Structures are given as C-alpha cells and as structure tokens.
Image (cartoon, rainbow over all chains, first blue to last red; front, side, top):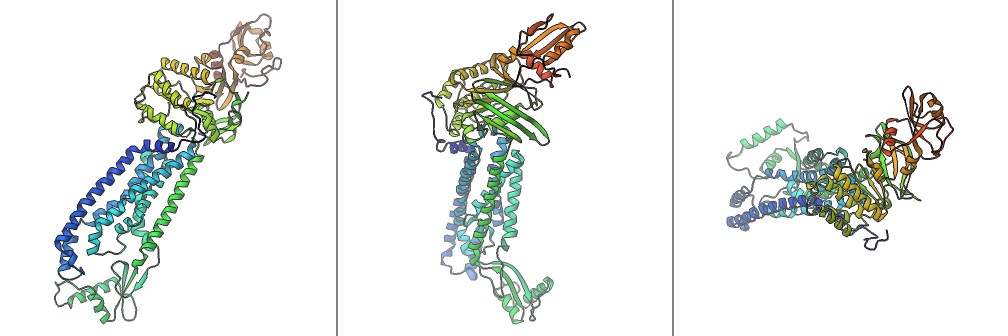
Length: 335
Length: 305
C-alpha cells in the first residue's frame, strides 16, 4: 500500500458517477434529443406557415372573431391547423420517456447481474442510485421543458383567433412545468417498477401503461376537482373552464335532459331563419325572457395558475416519495 | 494478524431456506483462501455477504480487521469479481476502466492499462466481444485497479477453459505477490487448489465443515491402513473422517495433530488436499473446524454415520 504510483484520493472523482451515467445513457440521450429536434422542426415549419397564412388572411386587422368576415376568416385559419385531438399523443410522451429511461435503470442491472459490479465499487450503491435519479431526472426535465414553449408558440395564433378555456388540456399541459413533471413522475414510477419486478421488459410495459393511465385519469378526471367550482347564471368567459350546465325553471327546479332538449328545439323553431347562425348568447336571453335560467358551474380563468400549482405540487411530492422508496429498497435490497 | 473475513453466528435465509447457517469463521489476512463446497453449499451467499451485496439474517460479518462488510470503508478496500464477470457487455474495455475510475476513491489507471497491454487485451473492444478468459482478466484488472486489501472472487474459474484457467490463476498469483492482497475465492473445482491456495474453507449445506491452513490440514490428516478387526479400537482413538473397510483391511482417514501416533501393525499414508476435500464433501457429517485440532483420546463418532 505504499507504492508511489498509487493514485489515492480522499474523495470520489468529481463527475465520476456522472460520466458513468452518461456512458450508459448516451443512446437514450441522443434518442430524446432527436425526438425533440424532429418535434421542434415540425412545430417550426407548421408554425411559420400558420403565421404567414395569418398575415395573408389579414387577420391582424380584426378586433374580434365572433362575427362577420373576421369570423369566416378566423374559421378558415383555425381549420388550417390539424385537428387538435390528434395531438393527444403528446400526453403519452411523458409515460414513454419515463418507461424507456426509468424502467431499465435498475431492472437491467438486476437482470444481467451487473449490479454486482456497480454496487461493490467504492462509491457504494446509495450514491449510485441517488446520483442516477438526480442527474437523469434533471436531464429529462431539461429536455421535456423545451416542449412547452414550442407548443405555446405554435398554438398562439390559433388561440388568438379562438380562445379556449383552461380545460384545454394541451395548453394546460404545456404551460408551466407540468409536462416535465409528468415525465419525472413516470420516470420515478419506472425506476421503482424496475426495482420491484427486476425485469426490463415488464418494467417498461408496466410503467408506460401505468403512467399513461395516471396522466390520462388526472387530465380528464381528477383535475376538475382540485377546487370547488363556482356557479353563474351568466355566460362563462372565454378562458373559464365551464364544467356543467343545468336548466332551471322559474320556481328554481332543475329540468331533466329531455326537457332541456325540448326547450332548445322550441328556441330553434322560433328563429326567423333556421339556417342562419345562432348569435352567441341568443339562447340564453331567450330562456331568460321565459324565466328559465341557465346555471353553469365553472372554474374561473384566474384559477389557471392555482390549478397548475396544485397539480405540479402533488405530482412532485409523489415523484419524490416514489424515488425515495426506490432508494430505500435498493439500500436494503439483498441479492 | 488481523482477519480478512470474520463471521460470528452468521446466517442468511432466503424465504424459508437457510443458504448459510450459524457460520463462525476467522480467515486470517495474507492468505489465498479457497472456499469450496458443492453447488448450493452457500459459497456465493457467504461471498455476497462479505462484499455487502447481501445483508445477514443473523449474526454479523466483518472484513479486514473489524470493518463491517458492505460499509463505505469496506467498499473502498474490498474488491469483488462476480461470477461470470458481471461487466457491461456493450461497453468497451477502455470505457469500463473509466467507469471504474469514476466510482472509486482509489484507482490505479496506469497499472490497469499496463496489465491489459501485457495480456494483449484490446481496450477498444467491447466487453461482450471478448473471450471468456479475456473477460475474466478484465474483471480482475478492474478489481485490482482499486488497489484492494482484500480481493474476493466468486467462481472465477468456472467459465474458463483449462488454459485460460491457468493464465487467470497465474495473473492472480502475480498480483498477490506484488500487492500482498488477501484473496478469497470460491470454486467447485477441487483440482489445482493445492497449487493455488494456502488456506481452505469447505462449506456444506450452508455450514462450515473445514477451515484451516492447507499446510496444517494436510499435516493433520492421514490415512491409517491396518487389520479390520482392530479398526474399531483405532477409530475410537482418533477423529475419523472416513471409514472404509474390507473383510481384511481398514482404511481410516483420520485427523490428528500427532503424526507419530500410529498404532502398531498399522501404516500411515499422507493425504493429498484434493482427496481430503473430496472426502469431506462426501461425508457431510464429518467436520474439522478450527480450534483444538488435537483430540487424541476422546472417542468421537464422527465419520461413522
């Protein structure tokens, strides 16, 4: 132990583990960046095309897009965008990233036996897993955070013509940091699944299915319940999230769906020209004249950020808990 | 002399089966220790416990003079070569070395590269493209680059052909002479042990059956050959490991610290290590634990089951 050429360090080499992680995730990093690049290119090309179309239609001159020529032009413009439901696949990306990066992280080491190398090095297994979670988590966050501004820029002209409420899940997803947070949650689920099932393929499959189901259920089920909705008899604003509408008669009794439908048919019947466009709010005032009221429950536009905060918050907490659980399992795991 | 591996009442249970039970051992440092036993005897379990990959169900295990196995201090000074050289197959040898460097406080990169150059192993090749022998050498190089005080190898020879086996052991022995590192390796190959190790531990069904220096063990074990009708008498005087009798002659493999104690009319033959180990492995009830090896006049029933 006294050999002169011996490299003795008091501490671990700086970025030693980071290089190891980089070496093992080079391919995954290139893949993620390639995906981001192709997404970015598509967004850039179609976004620029949309902007030039916007200019060609002369939409700058329009004050409002709810009536007249501007409405027509606005429609022409928005229909030049692909149907937005096709972009639903974007909600599956966090699950995919989490599954393909997180699932194999520990599972592959356990499956191939290389954990016996990794966990018997001087750094120890706790540092091994914690560095991995932090470094890869940060990288995933950085890459996925780029998706938000790209989408927001791309959809901006559309949103300008046709403002949407914050039930618009894509706008909600890509504003703030929800998209990266969904990715990190899926990543944590993937790592934990890998520790528990010890099989790469199973971990990836379970993580993808589970994370996508969780994000889907959150977006389309859970999210509306973050706060108690308000109710109004007036019309909700363009950026509000209208949840549900109920009809009441003059005595305040609620109408059944059938009764409400009948009312609407009666309204359509009395219109002078049935083929003409119904002006916005016409039905509402028609109902009010007959002492019916429309009760809309909604989340006001001002709740957008509180909702973002709530969802980011619980998901970050859950991610940290799952990550800590995975670390704990690895620390006490005995082969 | 401090102990390389020291266990007291060590036990490890997987589910309902005890892979290792009530194991108390003190392997002194400065030896090349062979850990032998049939498959499933608990060799890998004991080594996993020694490198901290597993934690004991019962008892405790310490390395290098009292450091708890698997602790940060132990991981710095204990190197491990896992069975089948568990390296990343799609990583080049050079990158594998760099990974080792990144994960250790002590690392002798120069020596590792020199070693590989000497062995003619191309560092640009991926680990998965190497032959089994080369892969084992890379694993050994990675382990030695840590400059360990204790080197633990799990079945390092099992996947190697005789030539590679020979080369591997030569490399290991060179490292031992150079660094004075203590070595513990498991093997179910009993042949060649004598040439390599100077300390032996035989595991059987999760228990330690034999443990001691090879020199002492071979000096203490003898085969006594004599008339069958006196065999019972003789067997009462010595601990008998194996008892083979024909109608006229008896062959008793005994353990005694007193080689002069040959009964009149009997002949004494030395026992080769390999034969001794195989005998113990065949006679699970026989044991020769360290401690008072000399029990000359106590009648024991061992070996007569």
